[in-house]
Image (tube, rainbow, N blue to C red):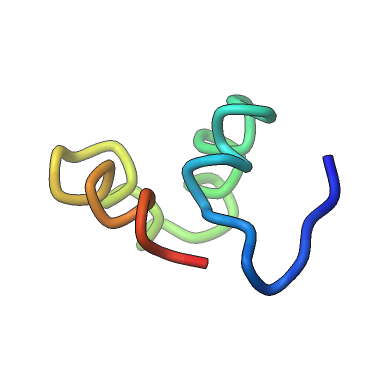
Length: 46
């Protein structure tokens, strides 16, 4: 997967699902990705 400025966060998490939990371990603020609002925002976030 090529990652650039236009790559959506949801696409990265679909390709590398382990990153969702790994990011939470690095910083607790990433827990939001596991909520319905976080899932919606991941589709828009680059």
